[in-house]
Image (cartoon, each protein chain N blue to C red):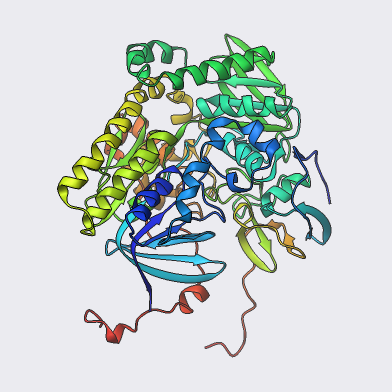
Length: 108
Length: 469
């Protein structure tokens, strides 16, 4: 997983929280949002847009801009900046629009 | 059945907390809702769990919010954090979700204290990863003690940008440059308002102190910058701009931008309340009476959501709205309302006297209100300023109609980060005032909610309802 120079911590407080991003183990701190934990891990972009495929990452950190959308525990389009990180959480970066559920033959 | 409460307060920044204090002291039942897990709003975000190191870095004004947090300890006051409000109605029913479970509460009085958001500051490249708002940088510091990668460049204008710079310096953060976009003419336009600003001298003194700290630190400070452009492959790598006739290109790993704050009007718009264009603050604000009452019975607005006043003034506004709510509940009479409101209003008006100076001095640069063609205005649907100008040339009259032309404002943020700019670009192209082109019509849900959450809601059976069909 490509990692850039990330955000650094002023102080190391809060219990360590182990979760994963795209299958890679990442260490966060209790009290981090998923977006904060991603930025601390050096991941600035959590998705590619559905329109042009451009990379995007956390921008406003207060739930207004929706640029930090990621998949969390199988649910797509979650606001990473509004979701507290939890032990064992599985985060996936998103490419384009969320996939639609498989159509089933007996529907309708 | 839905829950009931005497007063519901949405948002727990200074306005919401101060309202709760007054309501709680009067023995009213208060339900406070906030989208964040802890109270405090953005200004006092993370205050309840701030470490000594963070308190030192963030400063006295931040720590002072602890007095307001004490409002939550009053009997009758309940706080629900992590509550995403996705619908409010004129009948004062509030629908919200907590951890994926949707609930509804009926309130006899409803106070919207939803605060401000940062003004959109569009320029080419502002969507690149690594470009964030100054508010975002400060939130990361408040909640996780995070400091951005270096080189770090701060760009834009407004008190928050200088405050953040000073807080970063206190934290030992290196700042490669401060690129100020304040138009030089603003100083002259602000000057006539200086006497008003002296009504609360500490605003000016704080600003002077912040600028002095930035100067002492020897940070390169570019003034009157224009033509901003963030560059990079996959993430921000540099900021280009022109200042005092010279072109600059500063390498950066993080670029934090800011050009003021504007009222968060999503809820008041969804309620279809009357809004007026405020030319001085270059934003829309709901029409309110002197207590924060709206045109809808029992619905009040307090704090920056009703027009930008700042944190201290917002607390006074919160208390005024709370008093009006107590009167609405019949808990106090008109005489008591007027008597108790008078000192709050005097204090609020002193703060408001300082606003014209600050509003004029930090009015956003015109380049962010009418940016170059290639600039993305609507981040969600990736609609550029050039496209919006094309829509106007084809006869598009305003932001609402622009949706049909090319989808600006129709992505998940619902126009929060493009509404003001789409309106100002269309207004400039048509040569009419912004007030004439209007704003997006905001509809529920205010935040995405799943069908599963809706289906699982415990609501009264429509058959039991007199109005049921």
